[in-house]
Length: 244
Image 1 (cartoon, rainbow, N blue to C red):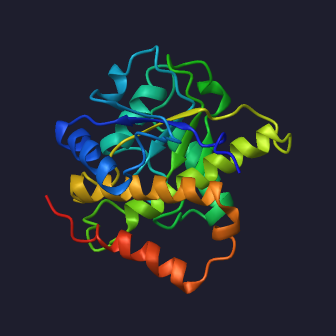
Image 2: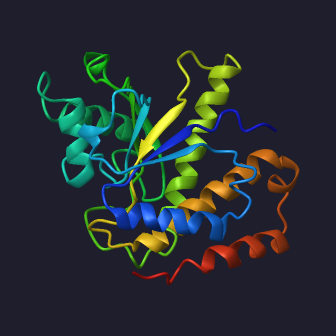
């Protein structure tokens, strides 16, 4: 099965420690990536508002809370970049909370992903052509989540599942809309979540690697036995205690 429905990724790393951690994790946890890359990943050392207009993307990832409130840390940057000055600051929060209520009665469990289309009044209002926000809670509320040993892996996996499914349905004519060809995301849970850059990067890379494998090998991933499962788990367990 081809990987044509997996989007390109813009990895917005505002601090060098995150881009460095990612560059180190890629060859360590996905050695074949450079010779046979199935996902296009571009690292940017910029603020959200400073991303060049030439780098268009259709979706931005919110990595924060379970209630869809886009008002702190990177979520605050999202609301400022896509709502202000022409619309109220809470325009995207209101849209996200309505979708989360319909899907989860208002509480999206950490590790899930919900795609939220921009309300029509925000269309065409940003220079990057972004029309979606993905709500990927890494925590219920702002807090230290180092106890949640695989939260980054789970969020990245859920994100890729939702976007790939959307693109596949559009391609096959099952859903009316435009493909999500490129997404923008930040280092998940590394702010108030206090996940170390090394742990975040390792789990990001492993989630992408295993997701590509799952798409390419449905015969394996649709009929997993415990031997397969435990082999995969052992590699993920290596990330649990990666510190600063």
